[in-house]
Length: 275
Image 1 (tube, helix red, strand yellow):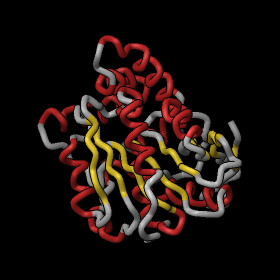
Image 2 (cartoon, one colour):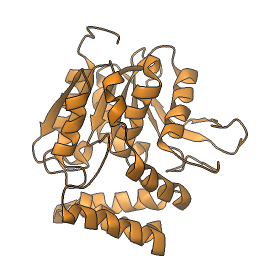
Image 3 (cartoon, helix red, strand yellow):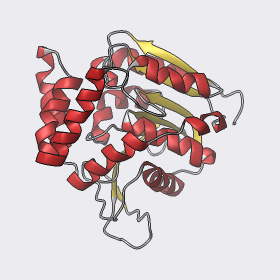
Image 4 (cartoon, rainbow, N blue to C red):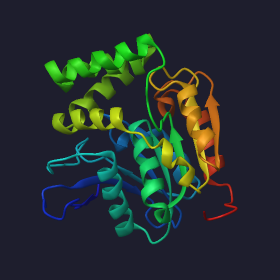
């Protein structure tokens, strides 16, 4: 996995971003951003489809996750979007498609708002502009996670999260993989990311996004319900939504064939305007 040194404040040279860069000879690139606690490797079921379609795939471990180090004093959605924008300026010379799931989708959304010149189009997977659970069960789930992380650390809540995302008995191996990825996270960054996601609110700026946007939602997502994701479509001028049947929060893993088809159809559409 190649490594690029990115220092968000130009002072801490110990920060570095690890990323997959597959088929770098291809002109058309797609940036893939993973969810909270995961890594760039979580996109492995999309890589072959994207590579076959003739695309360059760039999939980083976001700062503080996987093998990416982050020692700066603060971590924020906007700060990470800035880091990724600098990385893409170093790697490519034209706008790219940005695809993000969950936390990665929130960061992709921030990139679309703050760095529109770097973004060709956006794919927001199980993502939100402002998240407030729509049920008591939803509030209790996130409250339980917050208590576990604060009182007992990231490792204590990893199996709880994995069970929620992969609830079926046949998904035991997927739960094991997710727990292993979460345990690689910097605990300080993980906690900061949870706070940043809880406070994130881009609803007032959604109308400023002029790029084509596809919102992909898992029908059975119990973390970010479909109706919360629909708010993105209601506010972003060129957005539309596709709901994948039986897809959960990790729709890129539990429904990869349908997801890949929907993703490629959108990425291969000709743009009517650069926005």
